[in-house]
Amino acid sequence: MSKREARSFENLTPEQQGAYESQDLANQLGSSGFNNAGLVEPVPLYDSAPSEKVIKNSNNAWIVLGRDRPGGVESGYGGLGNTAAGSIDIVVGRMAGADGGPDGNLTVGPNFFTDAARIHISQRTDIDTNFGLCGNAQAVTRSGIGIKADAVRVVGREGVKIVTGKAKNVSGAGSGGERNSQGGEIQTVAGIELIAGNDTGSEELEPLVKAYALNEALEEMAQSIKDLNNIVNELAKTQTQINRSIATHTHMVPVGPAMSNSTPSVDLAVTIATKEASRMSNVHQNISKHKNNIGVAFTSDYLSPTGDKWFGSRFNKTN
Image 1: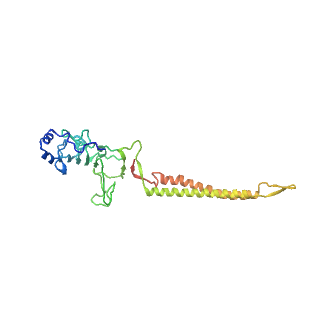
Image 2: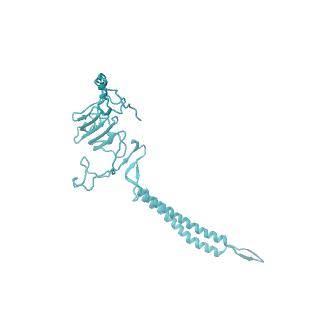
Image 3: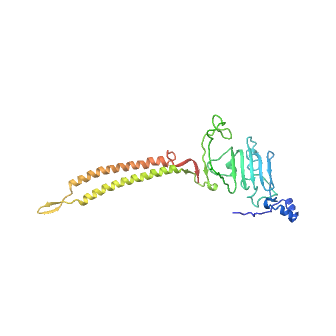
C-alpha cells in the first residue's frame, strides 16, 4: 500500500528550499520534473568512506565503489580492514522507507532496510546477515550479490535457470575444478531455498516434491491397492462357493418309519474343507506378501529420505 505522495518537496535543504521559492514561475516549471526535466527533491547526504568512489545524481540514485560495508564506515569486512573485500553498491532512494522519507538535511550510510532498491555486490561479505534473511543456508565470509526492492522480477525470453554448484565442462578453473571466492574447495552441493515471508516459523523447511518420482510412487500405491482388491476378491469367491454349497445341499435319511433331516454331510464337509484350505492358504500367502510389500518395500523405497525412490528433493526446500 502506497503511503508517500507522488510529489513531495518536504525535507529539502534550506538552500534548495530558498532557491526553489526564489524562482519565477517559468523557472519553477523548468525544474518541475515533468517530461523528465530537472527536479528539485530531497536527497540525503552520504557518509562516504575515504576508500569509496561515489557516483550520484540529484535524484537519489547512487553507485558506490568501495569495500564491504552494509552500514556505517566501521561495518562489514571493509570496516575490519580485510583485503579482498571490494564492493559495488547500486542504490536508488536512500531513506525512502524511513519515517518521513528522504531528508536532505541528514547524512546517512547504506541501509539495506530503508533504502528503496539495491543491487549489492561484494567480494567478501555475510550476505544473509546483511539482508536479514532466514533459512538453513547462511553464507559467511563469501562473495555475494543481493538484490532487493519492493518487487523483483527476473525475466528470460528463452528461459530462466536457478543453479547451485560448480561449473561443468569448462577450462581455466584448475585441476580440481572451480573453487569458491576464498580459494576453498566446494565439497558439498548447496540446495535452493524458497522462503515466503522470510520466516520459517517453528517448523523446518520441507523438501520440494519431484513430480516424476511422486508419480512413480502413486502408481506403485495404485498397483498395491489393485493387488489387495484381487486378494479380497479371491476370498469373496471362496466364501461364495462355500455358502452356495451349504445353501443348496439337502438330503433326507430314514428314521424309523419316517424321514428326517440328516446329520451334517461328511462328504460336503470334506469338500468344503479341501477347497477352503487350498484357497485360504493362497489368500493368507498373498496378504502376507502384500503386507510386506506395502509395509516394508514401499515405505523404505518411497517414503524415506534415504530410499532410492524418495520423491522429495534432497537439496531444494520451501516453507
